[in-house]
Image (cartoon, rainbow, N blue to C red; front, side):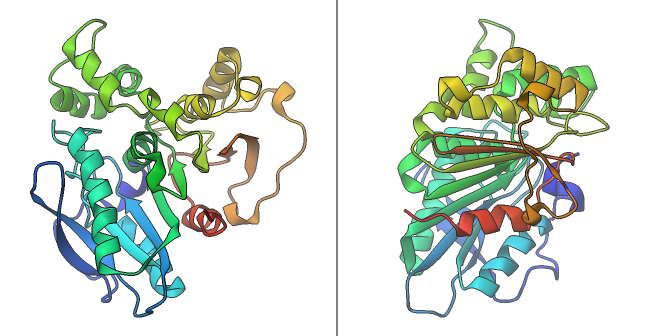
Length: 311
């Protein structure tokens, strides 16, 4: 299932978006085209935090699952932008392309030109395909972000293609349509997956506070992104002594449980509510959290953590 896309991909604004949030068009530096987003600027004249929220794999800027982010920003007086970044991830211009990165960064530029942004508090959040895009743009433009919260992200498109084939999920077809073929070793499509995957760029984001969260049951029972993606994203950002071994990654992914040698003390985190935290590890600026859930985001946990981050 597609992360926050449980509510479906929307083709009209609908009544769920709060009235203060406007549908806008802004100029992307990618190809000088006007791209769509939902946008909110608070009435305050003082500089305020900016939240850039990214839709999931099959979603768009109108995705209703973006509404909780908007409501948080209205309540807190934050600036909010929810860009389309080329919409559904089933076309070459989407799916981690250069245009996607430029669209997200151009949305930040638009927000700064149309509201008073607190430069010390520029936040990025995404789940599933949005989690992928959040880590990708963190690696490609780390200087932009105060902190990034990424939930159940895809980090390696080639790996995810073959996982999706085995699970007979539609995402394999989406990837083929995006990269121009099956990503077999040594082929141009395989190179395309490398260029579009966060894992290729994540090492450059080690200076950015990044929280990666995943339900330990993802990849099972219909969950679309195996938890191994989040574990490998953590490894790419962590110090060598803190990284998980391949055996540990395989054990967590396959058994949906944490090996005893990794369990030291229980983690209590009320922000996760009923979804108990089963494992947490920090290294450098990255925090990995596994919780008793699946392919999902806990919005309050994501935004409360971001709110604590300052540059």
